[in-house]
Figure 1 (cartoon, rainbow, N blue to C red):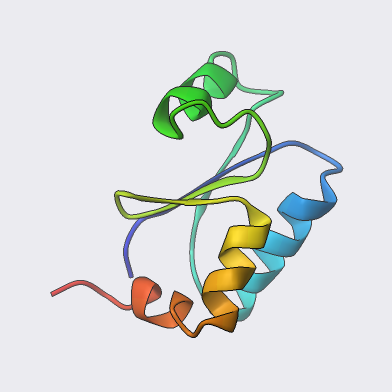
Figure 2 (tube, rainbow, N blue to C red; figure 1 turned 90 degrees about the vertical axis):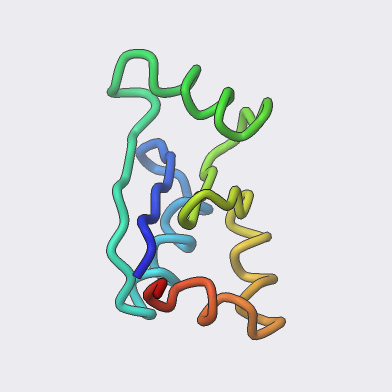
Amino acid sequence: MPEITIYTTGFCPFCYHAKKLLDSKGARYDEIDVNRIPGARQEMMQRSQGGRTVPQIFIGDRHVGGCDELYALEQQQQLDPLLKPQG
């Protein structure tokens, strides 16, 4: 499975739902709380090319976007292929 990073904050319902979907797929991810880790929000904004809202989700080198975009991939049956091991 490719490396997954999700930038979050505490008490964020969109973050919760994005993580719930990833959990249902058995996906392991690194969660970075942008309010608790110094510099994380700036890192998130740079990686996402200006994205200020959470969650910001990365699967491998691909910037997926937020919760809505993650669920859109699932609805279009494009999420599972992204989560498959590479190689």
